[in-house]
Length: 623
Image (tube, rainbow, N blue to C red):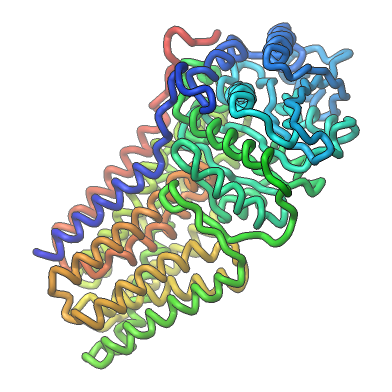
């Protein structure tokens, strides 16, 4: 009973930490101090820009440009225009939007906030002012433009700074980055740019994350971490996000200077995905907390860059991640080996200690096998439940169908997360005590559901084969949680070792949890190998809650980014959370029942997703 109470407390604490870590800060009011970023002040410009859809070639697009010219003039930026050609791909997109393209060009707006040392490399603030057809674009990217204008005002209030701050409001980003290409293709200011801050959005809410940097980013990340600590709500960023984004075909205006070797950061928020490129992206629907978060980060980073004696240079790529959005830990890749080694030593100490008390290596190996079952069965369950919510993004037959699928993401995330939770709870309850035929039948049914509704998928097929095989693998009985716990810990440590060798930027995902849980295991094995003392159980619960909460906090942005097509990625994070709290579980019919209920609830969320059509606020509806 005592362990069950600690388990419940740890799980609730982990969930609470994850929720808090994903909350955007409250917006600052219009009467906030002049030196601070205020979302309410920035909303004035959002409303001016996002009155209606304003794609390139529309009358509203021209009107927005004129209003922005006026605003930049009011801020003393002495704005100028730069025209550049539209690419063939841009012309084809305009044709699909039924917008005549004869004589159209991308027209950028460029201004300068002068510094005291114009001979120094300048800092560039960049966002785009065009929208897609049919969307007012309050988030993408009126929010970015408005945040830049408010950042400029706050920088002026903070007094002179050595470096010039160049403001580039690009055009035709939605048509293929043509405005950014025009500027970096030949504008006189191009070669003066030493660092870039780009602001984007792929949704209308959530915390803003720094998801892309220049190559060789160690110095940039270090400066961003220091500056971000002063931003409202801290920062959300990790080398994993950069690693994953580089593998995707996506691009933004930041792609252009990045490919030229310019250092910088790319900021965006991706919550409330139903607003991405849809009529729902109105000023009233925009999360002002998200605007506060992205703007505050942009201000503090721009201020740090503009006052830096030397701008960040391209060196090595850093390994880094935030901890609950409040602190950023960054280090060179070689330090990752030290972390893997230390976590391995702690794990090895715990293993040797409990082996002296009768826990066999065969039992711990079975614990690792159980972890593989959780991972593979979790992938199958997540894909099966996700398939109930509609086709994957890759099977969407049009851009409109893709945007409609994005609107379902919150429901699909809840469904997939509950499916993974069901598998983890089943493992906590002591899966080996259940009829293996029933467990195997459930895995087979979920795999069939995923393949019938989602189509052939080698990931699902491979995971199903592994999970089904492990359902019938014989395992030794254990009288304590040690074998299952240390087996899981050994599995995660092995994953950390592999990641460190093949993709060092991602190794922290496994190495950090292995280090914390390895410490808990080593201390507990030394002081309370029977796992009975409240102090030892409390230590496991506290460190477990922190580790599981950190993993769950990562799950939300990861799913919003790639969960549409790869919902099984949540199983990996679920494995980390399970490892953190595994010794608090044990044979329990209640946990088995909770697992079944979680799976049914997850299926219900995903199945309901196609029927949950989001609605814009009445005053903001377009069309």
